[in-house]
Amino acid sequence: MTSSNPAVFPSQTKAPDCYRVLHTSDWHLGKMLNDQSREEEHARFLDWLLEAIGEHAVDALVVAGDLFDSANPPQAAQAQYYDFVSALFRQGDCAMVVVGGNHDSPGQLEAPNKVLHALGVHVLGFLPDAPQDRLVALPSQESPHLIIAAVPFLRDRDLRTGQSGQGVTDIQRERLAGTAQRYAETAEVAAEWSGKGVPILATGHLMVMGTSSSESEREIHIGGLGAVKGNVFPELFSYVALGHMHRPQRTGGREHIRYSGSPIPLSFSEANDRKEVRLLDFSHGSLREQGPLPVPVFRKLSQIRTNRADLERELDEFLPESSDFTTWVEVVVEDAGIGENLNEVVQEAVEDRDFEVLKVLRGGATSLQGMSAEKLSDDEGIDTLLDDPSQVFQQRLDEEIGFTEEERRELQMAFAQLLEIHDDKGASA
Image (cartoon, rainbow, N blue to C red; front, side, top):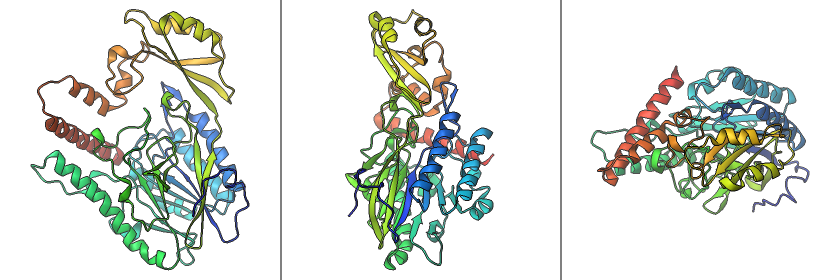
């Protein structure tokens, strides 16, 4: 039986026979928000994470994908990662397992594997062909207390063999069947360890149906074609550590299949989310305890939603919550006309205030769905749309008439495949 009551766990002392894991994901090192770097916030998070690992006697750290924000992360982001890895090694007694996410380059992640392995870090960017090669025994193959069934983000080539003339329904069915097969075959080889009383923790970086998303998450497959049901994960797994969704949550009503969420808010739609990592205690062949460990707020993101008549007054009355760094604000003016330069009005109103407005939107523009250039603030321009090619394509497709629903889904699938090929080539380069 597992527990998620933070009043009891993890404040208690770790039992001698317990193997403790910290589940986190979606760090998105190198992330920008409206051309503003998140480097300082990530640095504070990584420092806090090191302290938390030591304080709570964590035996293994699991990062379930999207370590970086892009396939070609900036040098500063790579330096943060490697500095953290070396600090974790010097701190001692904690292994690290990383799987690739849809933002990560598998080749870039795995390139330093020989060195990382010597530091106790196991990285799987690509899905190994042999299921047994997906298993990581911790703390060692000779005396395992836990088996990690390390499954990274599954790309199209991992899931199916494409055939000409296939319709979107066939492709979707093959994707879902392929995902189920990859987890089933991984569980099959892990069953030997489970039979010996060793618990199995599986990873995944994908979208499970019924989960709550935010604006900062890029759809893995356009139109939700890659979303799976929670029953895709075999019952053999004591816990499934998921990544991709940025809000911490369970899936399918099951406590042991969870997203840890991102450690910092990656968009203004996550301004009020509580960020956390998950602590897990394994003993006697199963998950015995689990619970959230809240991540401190290093920089507060806030939204001000108002109308044009109340805009200046609400900006004058706004008092930011205390945090380590300057509060960043998004202002949404619900009834603003097209002609007025809202950004100039807002920036003049907040001059010399102790917060900074990064985004000014006209009503209806906060959702990525249906976003158009006319709805963007003057300082954002078309570059904001170009950050997400799939959204540009969807916007263009929505403007077309005459396509049937089936034809639209086929075009969405074709674009998703082209985008994946482009990303794979960029990652290889």
